[in-house]
Amino acid sequence: MSEVWSPGNVRKIYTRLSGTDFYARLMKRPFLVLTVVLIGFVLVLSVFAPVIAPQDPNATDLYGKNQGPSEEHVFGTDYLGRDLFSRTLCGLQTSMAIALTTIFVTFFIGTAIGCYSAYHGGWVDNVFARIIDVFLAFPSIILALALITLIGPGIFNMILMLAVVQWASFARLMRGQVLSEKNREYVQSAKAAGLPAWMIMVKHIAPNCIMPVLILATMDIGHTILAISTLSFLGLGIPPSVPEWGSMINSGLNYMRIAPLNVIIPGLAITVVTLLFNIAGEGLRDVSDPNSDNTVAL
Amino acid sequence: MHHYIIKRTGYLLLTLIIASLFTFVIVNAIPGETAEILTKHLFVGIDEVAPPEMVAEVASRYNLNKPLLEQYADWVFGIAQGDLGDSLLFNRPVSKLLGNAIPPTIMLTAVSITFSILIGLALGIYSALHRNNIADHIIRIATIFSVSMPGFWVAVVLILIFSVWLGLLPVAGYGGAEYIILPAIALGLHTTASIIRIMRTSLLDTMEKPFVVFARAKGLSARKVVFGHACKNAFLPVLTVIGMSFGSLLAGSVVIESIFAWPGIGNLLIKAISARDLVLIESTIMVIVFMFLVVNFVIDLLYHTIDPRITYE
Image (tube, rainbow over all chains, first blue to last red; front, side, top):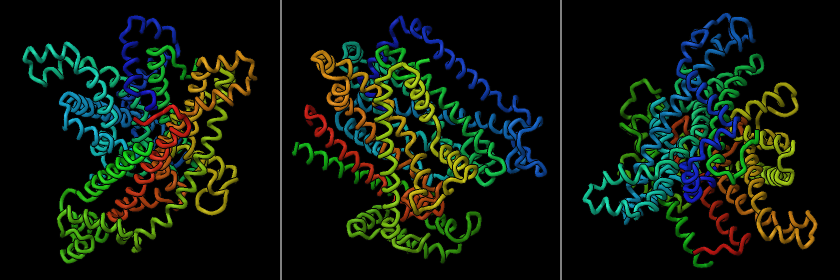
């Protein structure tokens, strides 16, 4: 997807996005509007998941293990007799909470470093550019696995790790933006007015560069959800007591002959949520760039 | 061109050095007393008290008494001499373990990427040429679904359908051709979908270029225009995607290999991480990063061969 996110391309998107006909074009795509509404629905669902869940996601029932769907358990139960539907619903909360926190942290760190590096220029910029390159040279899950060795599993560690893995792409994008912006007249005059560097960066440059990075952040949510579930599936992410889709699939593996829903349902949940964010992200890009023709035309 | 190759090689080496330093620091900078934590992990259990003499032995085994920089220098010199140390987990030289693990991974990745490219190009071209008809819509819906599905789940569902329910293919293992089918599909699905998408977009883009319009106008057959003129020019973005995909294939193989018990590098890395076998972890990660960097290096040079207009300045 990153071929779409070359700095030039993204700048084009930004220009289009800030155009007045953005909403008009958005409204011409009812399917995209529907997707955005569905994402809103998913977010609400994730906030209220423990309230909506018909049963306690961690209540075990050793006499009702690995059951098929019934009136009491819509999707059946897992290997400890826990209600699969409730666990999947609460898994949504886990995924969304971690994914959104990660994106928030990543966005902040990446933007700050990219902005500082480009604004400062000189050897500082050279060093940061090299560091960013090295981070991007690692296949991301490999870097995540290396970090797991260092800090061990856990929810907080997972957020930290994903942030370390992903900040570089945000930093690169922001750096490119600031580089093209920092010689504009308004920056010169702010400097001439004697404003401190941090204020020029935060108040003047950042607002003009931030939009493409915000779009990248939106697009990255689906990616992060996949990464979270993959690490949990490997048993390197979240403690087993917390309902999480990846670890649910992992624990369902041994019983998939008798209770296949335990591996199917959480995977479907991952797919649907990721799909929503992917469609929305690409739709947003298409709306902002009418020439591209990439989404499912529905 | 030669100047560029030299510059690019230097850059490759620099990245490798930084990456190795980085890997080494990450793996070795365990908070707290490294030797003690390692002893607990390897021998006595994480909640037990590690006997001091055991800790001392582990420390000397892993050279943990030396300063970190000296440990790093030892490791790099070891690599230069082909000696990667011994794995505590398997009690064998790391170089032997890696030597056994690299061929299966290369085989899986190669099969996977070959089929991804063939299917991806075919469906991508088909989709572009039949723009907005029903097949095009189906292909596009299928691709966006494919990139939204986690690879490990695809693997699990494939096992469920083809091994558990239908009994057609083995669940896991390594051997004849029947063993490679499911892991290759699970590994290559994302890549196939990305190639279809980028090929379609790129070809549609190219078809509107003046030289294609000219070729049509001078009366060349549609087949000649598409395959002789448009496709070659549309291929460049696809090459970039293939290069990037190689990284995600290597990364994906970590998960896929451990699901299918495929005896490759990814599987080795997961085992090493669960056992905290530091020597094995750092070397395995370096091998993966090295393969990734080299492939991207080669692809970088290929650009010029495919499109002579590109100069490296």
